[in-house]
Image 1 (cartoon, rainbow, N blue to C red):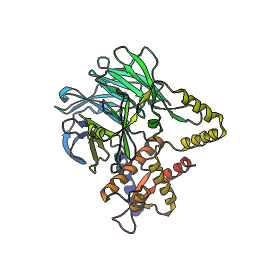
Image 2 (tube, rainbow, N blue to C red; image 1 turned 90 degrees about the horizontal axis):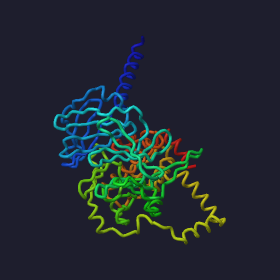
Image 3 (cartoon, rainbow, N blue to C red; image 1 turned 120 degrees about the horizontal axis):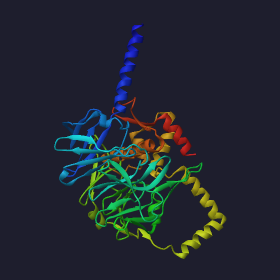
Image 4 (cartoon, one colour; image 1 turned 180 degrees about the vertical axis):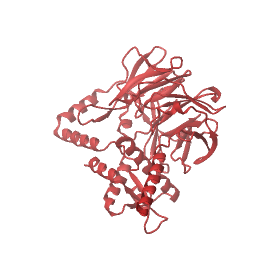
Length: 446
């Protein structure tokens, strides 16, 4: 065999093996309540690591785990975590699988405790803990969204359905205002995303807001959610046990479902973007947006409320008659019909990326065959010229990471925006769309 050819085969085998190992690298992640920092267990290496400061990780050692307990884990997964009193035990549930793991920090032992057979029904569900029991609400699976409420039976090692006495929300998933209130012992749900099962698979948001009372096992429809919140393209919503927080590019909505109030905190110096890795400790919300670069923001909800403006009620129990008349006039008028048609087209095409993200994507598409955009050109597209250098870098990284996450989640395209070294100056970066992302975005912006 030719020596060069043999060397090439060995090189290809080595590279493919490294890529395969990297692709299968996966972590079980959680937050340490004492330090408000993250911890993770790498399933491939069985290594336990702790974050000693934002973005800096320390190896604590190996976990004790039966390899057979991990064989059913998918190549990529997302987990939720629940701390028992005094952190004596931590439970992990794996989205889409029904799998439940128990971790003992005292002896670093991880074991699977469920006997789940049926799986794939609860991607993007809402996990929570109530009175020491694990629950999961809704999710996506088998080509449709669900509104099923389930609880884990520790004695049977299986999930069981919680059967309510009446009808509740149409669907429940991660895109809406969903969360369990320990103080009220109720589960709130509203504004989750649903899609029709016709050829266009058009998505829409559930306008009604509900609460499920565990004491009487009944759903109550509280009213229709404020249209200002539904009009926001952002789907970044977090529940800290008291307030719903809905992020936008330059403002933050703070929503109290019990008092039925919405406040908005506006500060153009802050850019509210997240990778959905939130953690709350008391009144403080922690927002982690980078694993290795120290990306961490945190703030006090009460402090923000002091400088927030009242917007209006979160939900309305009755729709005014004038609103019905306005809808009727719009439907009956030719101009209104045309506007609705244009809006339908816009919502079909857009709605998944916000305006700032779309602006950057269009700029990247325009420069796709011309070498891509420099860091400065990305900053110009995002209108960051008035911000400091550090803020420009932070916002740029956040927006690109968020777009890449959406492309992975919605279109199954990894690394849609590539970061390359400049041929002219290796210290500079060039941002370019991958070929798959470029083709998919051409269809998106039709």
